Length: 377
View (cartoon, rainbow, N blue to C red):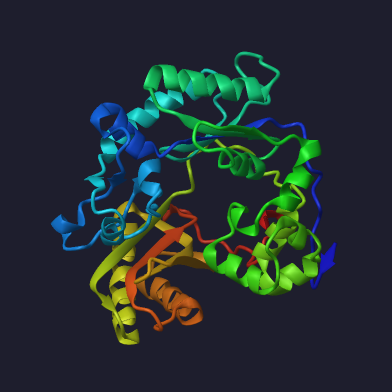
């Protein structure tokens, strides 16, 4: 398929892989409930109590009892308190949660070493070839659920399919403690009926734009051409074109995530003027540049993170042709991203700048293509 100067090569859809996505159920809150049985049946919110922080802070997660009151992760702890004043607020214990996560990973390793963690509480597993020579990924997923419960006393949900995208969607389909399998013959019908907001990777703004275009289900999305979606959403449009067709050949990678160096600031009071944003980005760019120097690294991609007073959060990025660690280079890209995507119709709660695609500074700068069609997706 051709579009403009680019030629998109439709890859063969690999239907032979067996991918499991395991997602712990309300992980941090469940750990606290496990350790303190008196919490069972009560709304538990993992966040610093707003009365102790002057109303600042955000919810890390909440148990299912608290979610009945509309409390969810990334919500301000103050709003969570207003929704459920009798909720039990517990400050997060990240080091402890990491230890529990390591116990869970040890269960995964009994079946495969092809494990790609997304966070402490979720991971992809490729069990196409597995250590126990079990032909059924569904059986493996069920055994993992049973062993995690027996040994760690926590529940998890699992999704099984032939690619990461579908496995991720499936794990969220029957929570908590659910197991959903999407086979190749079932995938297309499953995606046709799926609400667009359930498509993993579709953010709030993209979902709103899709809704404005009358796209509310997978069926609506499927009927649109690649050209239309690319015109409207750029690269994301092509990603959507493929995913609604069940195409996602990204491998499960057990290599370490691409390194990045970044800084972010939360503001109180919030930023309300353009010059405040520019001053803050200048400080952040300087901090990132100094951190790069300390680590003797440079990078090619600047990522700007913006969080508004209503907790809407967006990240946008721009690439350099050459590696850089210069404060001036980083600031110019960040300001450009702000000009294109930022807005002062809402107050700014947080700003962050991150440099990714890093390499040691002793590497010689090299010219890289601005658009690498081999890595388009």
